[in-house]
Image (cartoon, rainbow, N blue to C red):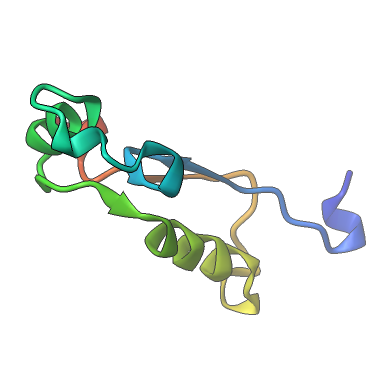
Length: 80
């Protein structure tokens, strides 16, 4: 329906991302950030800029053929 108008619809499924609202969580022993960082294949929290890079890629003309996709950016959580 929207593709005929040149509109693509893709989504990003992010994993744990370090953002200001969660600041200090990793300082708490046993905090969510510490737990999440230790569980993924890539043992660190993501950065908002990393998710923004995925969004910019999806918005670019370089992926004009990609439509209806879910892009998982979760440091390997879904593979774990």
